[in-house]
Length: 255
Ligand code: BTN
Image (cartoon, helix red, strand yellow):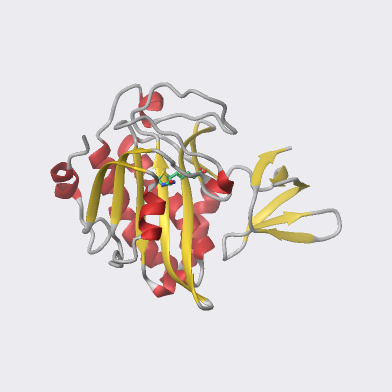
């Protein structure tokens, strides 16, 4: 079972992870935070050892072996972040990549919009959901599924999965990773408000698809072009034959 004391001792944040809900089983940590109107404290975290209806991007399912990985969600209530959820998406991916590199010296790669890869295999995914009140966002829930100690993955996957354990050849402490991630995340969320170009630079440095011919799929739509860049809102800029187009949703692969 996840050990709160081990986690807490290395946590160096002001807000993120200071309010912590640990569950044995829940449908989805994202759904939990989205539904519960009484949880409003910025930085509240819910972590579940098992999700019965874990959600992935684009209405997919997220599977994770019980007690092996990290499946958790963070409530963000900072209004300044609501102005640019796409950038928060990139900030989350950059923070995960940095924490992995700091602790395990494994090189990470980021795949638009927010997959974290090691050796071209997916180690973590991010699902951001937001609640809207009137014309504005009233809260954001950042859901993260990180494969830590799972050795075997069953099923069919769009991108082959991996875990820290599989890449490193040994199990690692989930608590240590989570506190390292939150320490970086809290700092980088502030940076995304004050110095967004730093986050964009860190993201670009880890993205190997930039400049490549790519295929973008969303539902039944398919587009082909060159991955030119990302903009300050985290959208992908796709260079077509005669013009450029901004892509906000979808999956990308090298053509
Ligand atoms: C993706 O890559 O498709 C995103 C996966 C996000 C999974 C996490 S696990 C914790 C949180 N709760 C959910 O139901 N989903 C996210």
